[in-house]
Structures are given as structure tokens and as C-alpha cells.
Amino acid sequence: MSGKIIIESINSEVLRDNPLGDPATRRTPVYLPPSYDESDAHYPTVYLLTGFTGRGTFMLNDSAFDEPIQERLDRLIATSQIQPMIVVMPDCFTRYGGSQYLNSSATGRYEDHLIGEIIPHIDQQYRTRNEPGSRAIGGKSSGGYGAIVQAMRHPDIFGAVACHSGDMYFEYCYKPDFVKFLNAAARHDIDSNETLRDFLAKFWPKMHPKPPCFFDIVHISAMSAAYSPNPDSPCGFDLPFEFYTGQLRPDIWQCWLALDPINMLENEQHIDALRQMKLIYIDCGNRDEYALHYGARIFSQHLTQLEIPHHHEEFDGGHRNTQFRYDESLTAISKAFALH
Picture (tube, rainbow, N blue to C red):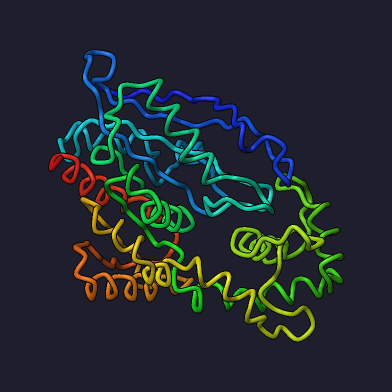
């Protein structure tokens, strides 16, 4: 038997009139297990967050060499590896490529959209078990970052978290891309906040042809919009380095570091939130191109020092084509649900 995909169109109040002019109506896929229409049962829920440049509908895409999420879930349920569950795939995409699932004056209130709009909507529309012990959050890359951060901030909402190759230890995962930004910016005569503003104003994700090296510019712009928004800047955000020299701006860089999951572990509220989780699942490829396996190791080491139970695993691989790891995390999440 097959599950069902329903595309919910959620009209967001908090994203209305967002700074980038992105759509306030978001198409949010919802997977219902095969047994949903045949019973009156209530089901646990998993929120899966896509990585940078992704949105929930991407997880449904058919591929010659991999399973879309609905086929993966059907198989895992049919083989009793996981219990039947509802899986929700939010859309927090922006014209810069993503929001990191955070509120920002530069992009919009995407954390509020996730926590205050999507989750209540799903709980109202579907037979969910509306309690933290039956609600998990997971994701990969920027989605893994969003998952671990939201779990630390909202233990009253989520009772389990899975972070696949999540952005952490910013010293390694972002700094190498600063030079890529600077070299690409120089190619486009971008040498100030004003010229960067003008470049971004003309950029559109589906424009063709795209500017050369556009991703190197848009990527760090998106991260700056998430981590160091500034309404008084021409761009709406501050870069963590100077244009000409590339020298770090310590005050702005500190804004980024404050949102690094590893540094967030210095906050007692975040520590207490993780102690409440029934599951903390962390994995990463041992050859991750963004050095995220080092961040995962550090995060795991800190959790061990804090005596917070968790599962940390490395697998042979890099950052891409790792959807197969959802078999592991969804199985672990299902077991955590069973403990409730």
C-alpha cells in the first residue's frame, strides 16, 4: 500500500510583505501513511527541513538513482522499520536560496512561520498527536542546522531531533567561502554594500542566463541575511568581512558565531532543552566538503561532556547524495516515539 501526498497551501501572515518580496503563500507537502484513511488513529509527526536552495516539494522529486521521500516512507512502513507517521516538508525558501529557518529583518520571519503557522495548521487539519513526545524535527545541511536550532529553542514543541550534516563550527564551514564571495564580487565590480544591493536586486533564482559565479555571492549574502541582519545597511544585512581586504569584522563575525549550534551550547536554556529530547541524532559523511564532520564531532563531544545522551555517527561519504541516511534517522525517531 502507498501513502498519500497532500500539498497544503498555507497563507502566511508573518511572511506577508517580507523584505525580499517572496511569496507569502507556501506549498507544504504532507505525507499521510497508508493506514491514515482506514482508521481514526492519531499519528506522530516529523518535520523534515530541506537544505540551502531547497524547499519541501524538492523531496518529492523522482530520481533514477534514489527514492523520493514518499517511496522511502512507504518502504520503511511496509517493512516495519518505522511506525506509520505523518511527515511535513516546509517551504522556507527565499530568493537568496534559504532562510536558515530563522527570523530576520533582511528576509522574513521564517522561524515564526514554521513554529507559529505550519505546526498549528497541521495539528488542526490532520489527526496528529499534538504533544512534544510525538513530534520530531529533522533535516540535512541547512535543514540539519534548522532542526538542531529549533529543537534547542522549542523543547515545548519537539521531543526528538535528527541533524544530518548540519551547519556548525562556522570557523570551518563558512570561512573558506568568504574568499569565494570576494573573488566573485570583484568579477562583478561589487565593492560596496550599495553595489552588492544593486546586484542582489537584479538577481532572481530562475533568471537565465545567471551571472557568472552567482552562487558564491548569493550564498554568503543569504547567510549574512540570516546571521547578521541590519535594517540600516543598504543590503539589509552586514557582511562579516571588508570588501577590499577581506579582513574579518569581529563584531559582525561574533553575531554569526552566536548562532553557531556549538556556541549555542553555552546557553543553559539550550542545554536544558536538549536534555528534554527523547532523541538527538547527529550524523555526517567523513569526507564532507564543507568540513561539517568536524563540527558534528565537536558538537557530539560537547554533548558528551554535558552528559546529554545522543547518537553520533559518521558514514563513508561527502555532503551530497546522502538521502539514504533518512533510513537511519527515521528509524531512530520511530523508536523514540515508541518510548512515549
